[in-house]
Length: 166
Image (cartoon, rainbow, N blue to C red; front, side, top):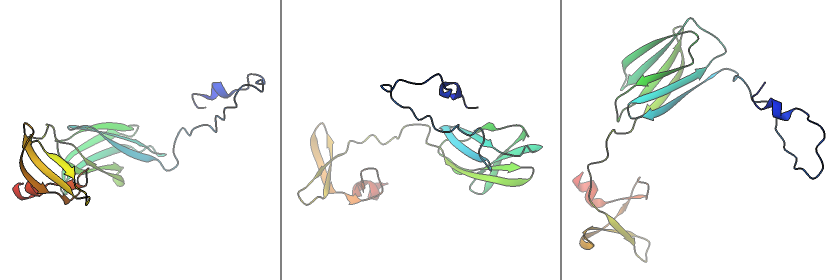
């Protein structure tokens, strides 16, 4: 029974002026076939949680980075979650293994552990033709002006000077 089932019990007939609330069916207690999820909690920790209809003797989590298994965590069969320590700015997979059989491969990418060291000011403007122009400035004085090229960034453009210098 779901936690809100007591709210859905018939407590008498509601007057017609009260709004009708459709509570829907009970939420499932388990998911058919199970599922596994990974959360990047911070730059140094992953949280892995899973459900399974079967209870094995052992679970094993393998931390794999660049094809190399860096860490193996052995867990009891009744386990359903675990914390995994990782290095900041790392991309890899966590493999969930049940009694020697691979159950899930969960990819992850942790963020850097420090802010970017790039502190340069960048200003941009859009001309009449829709092209983005950028000007590096110090104290509001333009030092150089360059056209931005379309790129993968959140604004859709990257500075041509940063591409040459980086």
